[in-house]
Image (tube, rainbow, N blue to C red; front, side):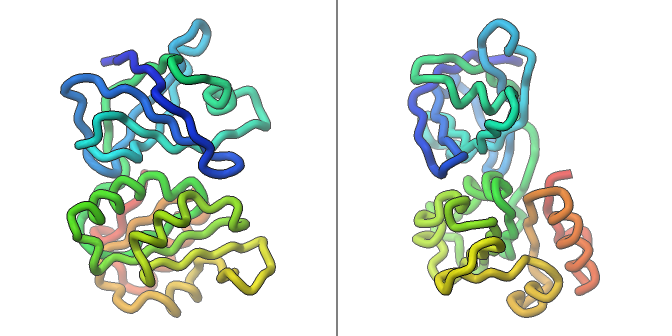
Length: 221
């Protein structure tokens, strides 16, 4: 089912990521980590739908999407970046993406943090973040989405890595088998993984070699 929603606000989060807040249809529900398909309510764009994860919480009065903008081609996100307050989007039914199953390690690359934002925000809201840790990799610190909020929520339980930036302020390791062996204390916990396909595949294989069973691997398929 399609719902027409109106843009309430648009905010730049990084140089290529924007936060869109839109009106919330009555009775519209989702779980933290779930996604929907959005399209622009305009001729030629209504059927150009793309999946985006909710970064708001279900008890918010609005819906929020944190979206990476790709300006190198004339696609959906490029046109989303041109929209203004009051413009309309088409919202569809929700579907599962990343489901929280219990304390563990969140491993994200780039925009892969977005399915985790609502989960981490909800856990923080209910005082249930204990036992969780985030490993978040980007090319540079300018690419890190909501670093301050994540740091405030997780305190010492977050590691930000920047793989293409040489400075003393950041960890520069890639999140690979060696990183996991060094930083994971308990491989019997859940592992939530989201990012570029190659990264997700490599991390999942590395975790399996450490004895992590498929039931404890949570990722978009």
